Length: 193
Image (cartoon, rainbow, N blue to C red; front, side, top):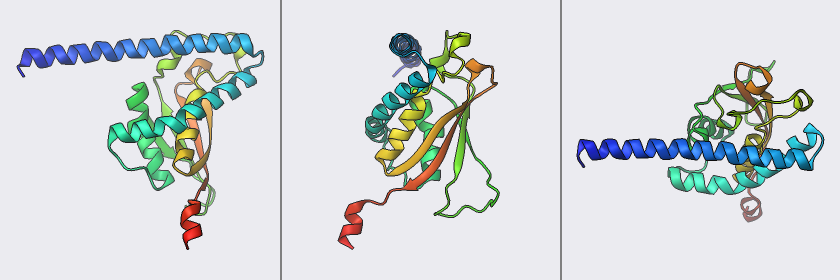
């Protein structure tokens, strides 16, 4: 392929990516308008977003693993690394980082519950959005938390996932907290032994 053809292909892919991002932003905005009409309280909207995200996440994990050609993560740490470094970039074009939240104990063993923070500056779902004062309790991108929870639960990692900071609320970054509840052992393996 000539340099000109390669450059044209790169330009086209960049335009498609930008169009996809804008389409996602506008579609998500339309969904939010519908939810705001259907539910009066921000807490109810947060719950609906989380449930919708969960249902997407339990299906999306298969798509991600197939397209990325990686094996499902076996540990919570590995899962957080994949979400942070690959999945958020793949689906939302978000450059995210993660950090283990230190506990009093500072010793992490396989039975201890522990928590990560995933943080990122840019969030395409927040583009063109301003929250009115009456929706200050709304976590506008709460669907992301549901997607993370659903995807991890589909691979037997049960977590609690919630937004902690949002640029729409005046924070410098977006921050999601992901707390390990348990690694679910497959029942078939237990029954065989």
